[in-house]
Image (cartoon, rainbow, N blue to C red; front, side, top):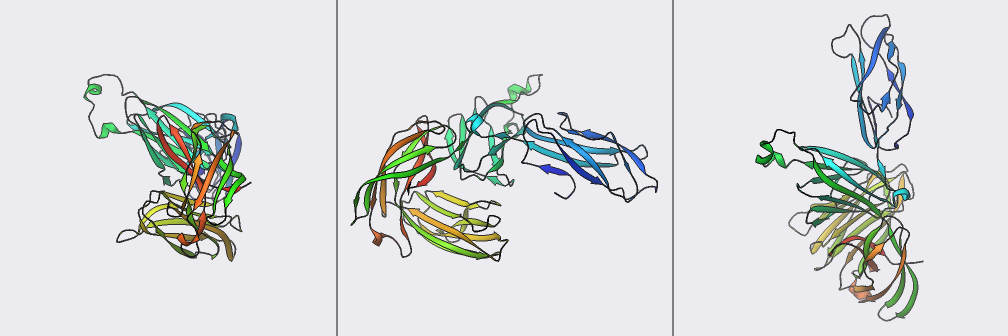
Amino acid sequence: NEGEGLYERDGWNVGDSEERTITLTRTSGPNAPMTFSVSWAGNEAGTFSAPSTVTLPLNRPVPVSITVNPNMRGAHTAHFTLDHSSIPGYAYRMLFTVVAPESLDVSNNFHVQSSVEVPRPGIQSFFYRVPEGAESLVVDLGWQEREVSMSISRPDTRAVRGDIVQAGQGVKQVINNPIPGVWEVRLSDVADTRTFDWEQAKKKEPVPPTEATLTVTAIAAEVSVMQQETADQETGSATHDLWVTNRMGVFTGRLMSNPLGSARRLQLELAEKEQRIFEVEVPPGSPALMARVFDSSNPDADADLYVFDCTGEECTPARTDADPEGDESVIIWNPSAGKWKIVVDAANQPAETVTYEYLDAVFNSSFGHVAVLDVPQERGQDSRWMAKAHVWSAGSGSHEPGRVPYPTVLLEGWEGSQSFPMGILELARD
């Protein structure tokens, strides 16, 4: 990377030791070389080290090797500082930041639980490396005495708000199709800015941090049709035996029945900055609207996905998936009835044109139904279980021209007596 300073959010693990080279050029001062002392501000963990001095001739670039060695998880930040006796204060300062996240992988069963302390008032950040192939990221926050706020940002640093599941003393966010990379979870206790704590004001001790429990799990379940037992050619109804495999983190859940989807499948050929707009009419009572852009013909290309709610007088943004790489997917739970618009934007096309697979689907019982017999249980990593599904279709006449039946099942998570959706799984034959 070129530019002033160093910021590396991904690529680091605790215990790594690597070198980075910066280039310093002195552009003012005497013609004779000047020797500067090198120090670090904010380098309490000893993550960064460099030579104790550096000599800089006038207008000549000088490479300086920096050793980076994160020895604990989290963000490591320090100022590289040059001092000279003839210059008040410091002569030059550069910011260095690397992140050594907690990885969600086989070693921890794609699940990390931590007892944390949140400054009061203040913000504490926690970083997690989400693996490729995760279908859901479940972030669970619990507290005892004081409520803690949570915000989540993706690897591209943009904030994201997952589907919210409220609990008595906590909150859960479920993020569908998370992009692989390093995610940040920020916890804060800023209630003192809104409400004066008279009890704490009477004490002489410093305000104690707020204790909380943070649990992050990567979920990836897949379902395949192993056998079609019976089929009715006239109605399109069929009964299937399903195999379900949990490839990542442990969760308690089951497959759940879902209305049949009505889908539009296309192959798009897009040029740089080209946009395609699709309209979807959502019938009343639809539990979900889904849109996907995937399987690009060029792995370096990027298309973004925007969904707009046009059921009112004006179209309003509903949800976006605009990751800088990978497939894009959006699920709108319980969408309002009426017109919706989906925009596919060819944000980055290294070739003249790039092809993508496109899918949008709206789910409604007027199209049919997929009934599943399954019970909520704990699903361990790499566990497999069987379920039976009966697909009933109302027939092709219930679909608009260009749309086809789209059978899926719902992956449903359970927390105590409360259930929540974790994803929509297409019924694909193995």
